[in-house]
Length: 456
View 1 (spheres, helix red, strand yellow):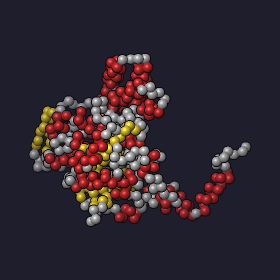
View 2: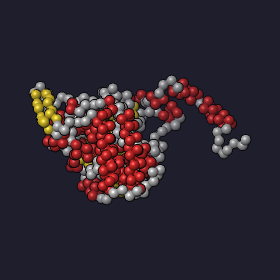
View 3: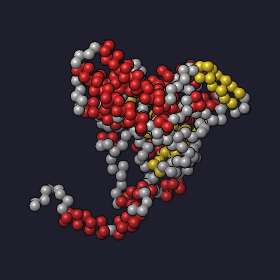
View 4: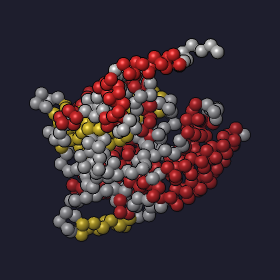
């Protein structure tokens, strides 16, 4: 039988094998990497020695305790609540405090399922085929755990906040995959019903009534798995001076409006992204088709700016004592155990005779699927040298206190430029010309665009 062009024939495989054994370093590397994690084998000791968790500018109060999202994709909720609590703890003289991440998770699950069902109707009215790219994408993960900044704003403005003690974690908030699998199956089942109704000319009123009936079941599943928050709370607490305090009864929205918003108002913040793809020029406003979580809420908007501006504004925010929520590709060049993100963290060249991540630009990595926003955290400190150059950032993560330096990471400025994609900054720090971009009509990116992956 004649071999096809490009086939890995025995002769080709023999050549590959011979090439491998020509260099004895390959054998040494093989001996190491067949026994331990190959990434750990590539960790640069020199980088670890030179990376000190010491910073020239640090926010006054960092939140306690270190939070842990466990086996869930709630980083976006944990990180914003970590940011908000710093000003709250200072105002109310608290040693430790957490807002309930499970509360916003509950609200998002209910809202997200409703938003998905309305997206199905919208796509059906656009004559999108069920096996087309858009509907296939929506059906792939109808109710994921992730989210974006404007989705946070929607949740907090509509549902408020509560202290963690008043809506604690559950099995399904900490390990969400089982609950999600049940919800996904129901949402796919309901997709068939809604698409059939649209195809047969159902009225908008009939479609809304159908979704309401479907949401009765969805709410039941979520409520059984997560619990259902009380309509009001009464918050009792001791401050640092051991004084007893009591607030309530009060609704979660009132709690946010009266006791949180004066010190951290989500409406005063804006989301800036850095997307260097040639198709998406800086200075433009973007949104993503079908991306959101709350019907009637804010659309998800991306104000695209150069990474240098984002870095500068993050540093300025920290200098003004406010931590910064940001989204990044945390999996690249991060020594997780030691909490060091540095372009020199791993010496792949030494181990494998080739490098990774550096042969593609940031734009290339987005285009070819090698990088995207997958995690949200909070900047709490920055180092700036005598020449005014930003060198590194301190990061509060939500992976517990066993990772990094007791839960904190160090990310270099070079790492920021390559793997940070968005940051949320107070409007008062953002230049007027950048704020003017929000007045533009947004350019719509497809639902599967990599800039939306933090919400998937």
